[in-house]
Length: 138
Image 1 (cartoon, rainbow, N blue to C red):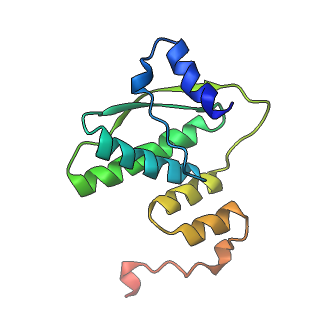
Image 2 (image 1 turned 90 degrees about the vertical axis):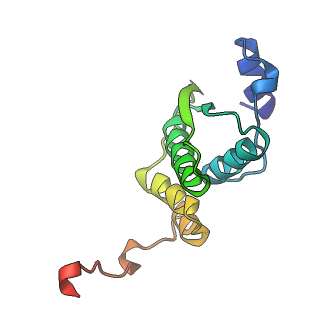
């Protein structure tokens, strides 16, 4: 589905075109959440609910990342997090997003893009993590 279809679909379903906000600078879903929430804060501070339009296999990740970014921003600004009121998805021929991919995207929201892209490109080695230290070991 191309960008024009993203815009056209909600309008065809009765949504006022002025209410459709498109972010088209991101290259990852985490960036889309970051950039979209920035647009909402800067240009549409009255907005407190949002809907996500994406593919069927991607909608859960979108909801996860937009919800997480919304919580992070609300902590910084003191505003309430956005409520994701609905999601619109279309069926795709195939595809899933792994839990590791979703974890990488959450890591990207924290600002660690290097680790995130290592996960995206499957160059991340979980065995390189430092060992977990319990408080009782200190």
